[in-house]
Image (cartoon, rainbow, N blue to C red; front, side, top):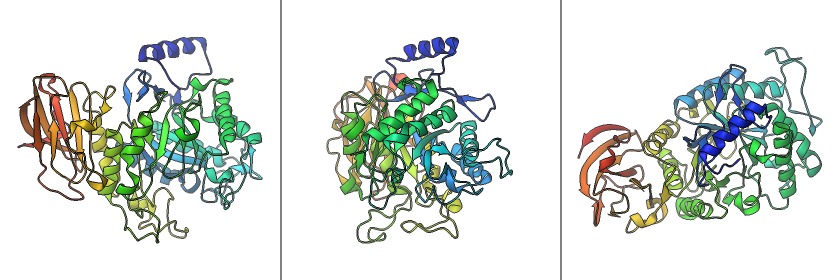
Length: 489
């Protein structure tokens, strides 16, 4: 769903609401009367916004198996923590990858009758604890409503790509013949909740384009009663090292592109280039890095899961800031144990190091709030990536990534390497500078400088885990310190 400007969106919403249009998506939270704001694409095509025109930063956690493998109590525990940590979105899959059509959920229910997407396994009533009433979709309703109640949007994948039969080990369950019917069921059931629709599911779109187009058509028909792509905010989650733009960039249902920059080493992945390529495409659409390197995940897969070691919070921070400062409208976090909800008695996938209920407390997730604090501390809707701010941006794990707005700039030095900044690229005769610490959300003031010439900035330490963000503001704007000011330098 796109809008040419914020005012036009508000006018459209008001007009349709007065008319009682079914095309309005009001994110209703569990019947409580609390609605999440509708989301749209900003007029410049680079960012996501709420219905009042304010920016929306897509900061997602990845819980692919949440509907399939959680109890009500576990889902609430997880969602409450992620809401406190500053996430805005949770990724989850309706037809889950890990045998979600054959292995029942925590309450003994499967989502489909005879694996038929046109026959969701629904029962009358929804009373928790009553096996005759509380079905798979009732449980999914609870999880979605609980997320919405806590202010979290659910990035809902209707299915994992496995169920289209893309790879030889996959199974062909969803086809062109039934995708629209399944999509319409989902649209009717979840269209008025706080949902971001994500087609795909870790698979190429090549050769399956018409299946996904049919599903997108079914979803909006279920929401609006007609083929109205303004009724939903929608994207596509591709396989590793791919982007939705490869197959669907010009499709009317694709509101923003999603990357899976993947879990490989930084020098090989180069996420700033991948995000930058989608940022530069026309027609202009936002881009989100929907699957960068997860925390405690094997770095790359060749030669066994431990060849390159496991990622840490230091690695995942790099992927967030590289992506955002390359122009992404949002990024995702993931933990290798959480996405699969690894627990005693479950088959481990690629060597998880923790059980999921331990892993939700790992440091990377707690540091997402500091991304949000920084990005939201200055006006974000006019920012653009600008590598020319730095004399030598370097490559690989030492990459230095820069972006700017009209009156401020951010420079991320991923390994604490010193750099030379080209001043005079933002407004103001004088500028105020800070170091921002992405590990704890604190800042240190560096003083006020002339906004001309060049200047070297050098963090105190170098190496993995010594990443910093330089924040430079037009001094006349009087912006407060980014985060909590702890000292002056």
